[in-house]
Image 1 (spheres, rainbow, N blue to C red):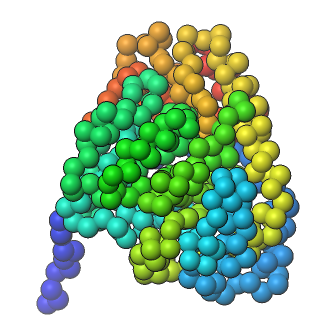
Image 2: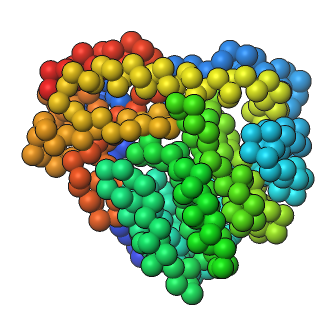
Length: 387
């Protein structure tokens, strides 16, 4: 008689993680054939010239492992780009690394510098991978709320959260989910706050080329006191409408990069070659990313203008491709309940901001994504005007 099959059980490394709100809302949107303005990705294609560039790389035989740190030509053009935009020169060989998307880059940063018991400050609401990444490293997440409705940093609360155990602080500008961008004054305040400490900074800047109304992106790279302690993460997927390619970069001082690469080498090792070679060629022309703010501002303005006639109260969207709205004039329901009813009753999917808070804080604000074709946005607006 054969022994019975047994699948061993074990303690979960992430016992509090379940199905994400994005999966739930996307499934609900598909079920009700809704216009999906929930999950943050474009429903339009990228520049054909970028596809051609990657195709040429494949045809030319760039299909084997690249260097662990990334294709040299791509690292060099990224270093030139950062210097041109932000005035900070990173060494392409020792301070720029190509990662398999920003989410992998964030995990690798945290694993490389956070030890068990170290505290890591995150600003709520925040991207959903931050806290699980900290927990996987054995760190202790310390959640500090951004100011409700405005989502501006509260430096008094950040300062109060700092202890001798604080290893790392995560910031995100332009900010997902709120669409808020940090000002030069706020970045200077952050630099002054961290100056007497040994705290590292992870600057999630994946929406760096989506800053509107003539304002500039305040990269941590611009500020010497921040750049010296920062891992600055950027995303080609967000910038060039190719989120499925999962290619990002991490810029950091050489000692921080050396530790990052130790983990990167055994985490993902390297990133697909033809995408890197194609991106290196495509990046020689800065026009696509320099024109991106105008491209998305036009979509933002179209969407905001269409919502003006509804009872949804528009919150500022100074960056990213997200628009948050206050729903308090429309309903007394929770954000999650409103989003579910919106899908079922009007056929439009949104995301409740409470999903981005550790404590589920509900301020009756939901998030729409306007990285969509104009006809998609107009179809959604036609339905939302019934509110």
